[in-house]
Image (cartoon, rainbow, N blue to C red; front, top):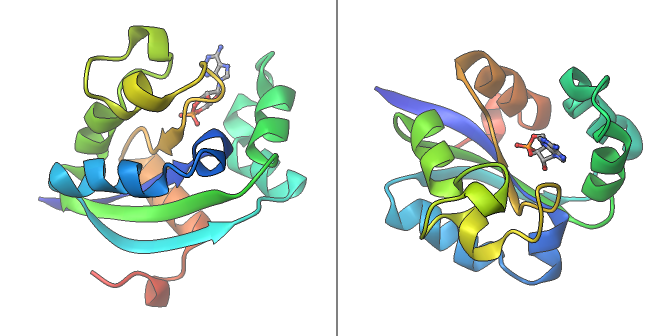
Length: 139
Ligand code: CMP
């Protein structure tokens, strides 16, 4: 079934001008970018987006990092888009990421790991509507 998932190209990747290389990996592996915008997250917005991690020791650093430069938020569409995107990204920690994945090739650390992707159906619905209205998504 065609699915949609929320992707974020993080500040470590926009800083190094990697948006196009990352988008090529999505497109080459069957995902369609059906919405996309480059934005600067506020502390409030980044904190709310990652609210589920509030109690984790890395939360404050994560919010600072995500507001340290531009991010590209995007909606990816395709067959099993949520799981497919997670495969394309690779493991959260680049040290554990498989060859050919975005995080293996580009991530700098577990925090500056170049991309975020929704981790399930509920998260995808919440995260897509966190950044985009229906009218901004053109499938
Ligand atoms: P992301 O998929 O955006 O979801 C939460 C983010 O927290 C994760 O990617 C990492 O960038 C960041 N993070 C920083 N430290 C850790 C950690 N020790 N474990 C998991 N995620 C971490």
